[in-house]
Length: 143
Image 1 (cartoon, helix red, strand yellow):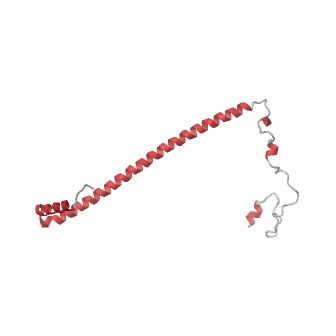
Image 2 (cartoon, one colour):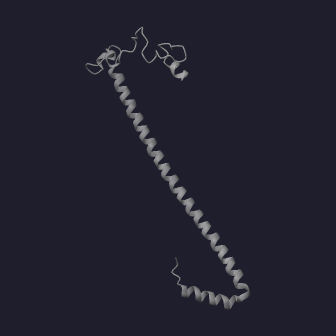
Image 3 (cartoon, helix red, strand yellow):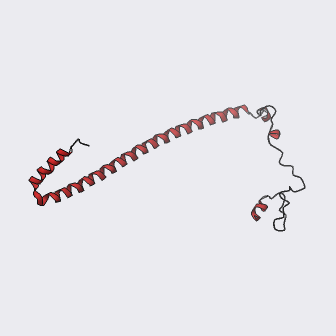
């Protein structure tokens, strides 16, 4: 990390042994190891906090971009609705706006017509009672 070779560490250890003596050197080495570990944990915590702040800042930018996109979409939708509303003035025929060949009655399949006979799926005997033809949920509830 700092470019310290093994020979330099050995030289520092010999000088520390001479200066501190053999009685205090183990205690000093233990204290230095403890402080070095605390320093590493502190640096890891600082790195994690910086990373979280960077991610939070990216999320803030993304949120502002999404809000701008939503605002522009809302504005475009409002203008489109105003244009459609302007095209349908009270005197106009609403069928004139539909695409040619597809009116409201032709676009939606005919669902209002029901036959008097129940469908084969509803005629199943599910416990002695046949469900009502207009209540398909009754057959599902019994299962």
